[in-house]
Length: 330
Image 1 (cartoon, helix red, strand yellow):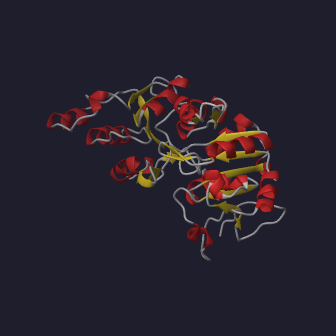
Image 2 (cartoon, rainbow, N blue to C red; image 1 turned 180 degrees about the vertical axis):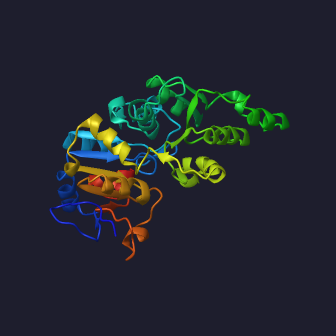
Image 3 (tube, rainbow, N blue to C red; image 1 turned 60 degrees about the vertical axis):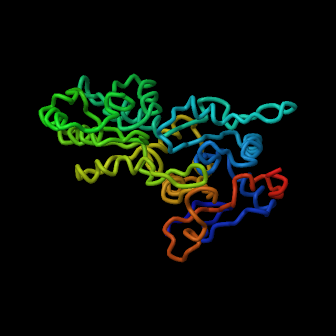
């Protein structure tokens, strides 16, 4: 069993249920200086922001010096994340922001861009990236001056034609400078895109993924995640990509380098055990908090044979306000 960190000076195999217990909530919050948040399934689901989220973030910001949002979604760049984090209240009340600036958003696409430009550092010209993903991935690559192809190219959003088989096999459709294949969440997958990715991998390109989540929570349901996009390439090539989103510790190292926080005074807040909570545990954070508005269910970590167990859990993020649910939802 993997325990969810240290809280209150001792480890425990039983996560603490905080909902409705204001004394325990205050003690938990006061133990940390930094909170790292997953976004989808914790702050919102799709375009629906959970009730009380803005107020909870405001409260935590007033009590903790540092907040960071570590979204695993690769399809949106930080600018869009900031936009969707803005909540406009009634006209007589000021607008509340879940984030204050770009500095508080750290996505898996950004993590991938940092890894490619500052760690992998393939020599030019064979350092171009072939992207299976959306504009958010492209924007983060651009921010690090990384050349790329594929992605949102409209010429690739079509059926595979008989002539394409010959053109891929001969290399006519391939870019000789591609040295990396990067997969993320792609809302326009196609056989042609996968065929090109496979061809690059067979040529020796590095195989990276922004994240390998099998599902994506949205609109109160689950949809195929970025892992479902890379799955065809994994099956066809026999290779496994290096995932640069949670729970990859390459992402934790990058976050720590950016925010310079004390890991023992930091808490990871997420909805998914095998990414968010495992990310915090393997990163040696002081605590982990599972929020039950996303993917994982409490039965999973309360089971005797549970492999990943958080330090504590709540029904919703707004439960950290310590107020009645009726008041929060009003």
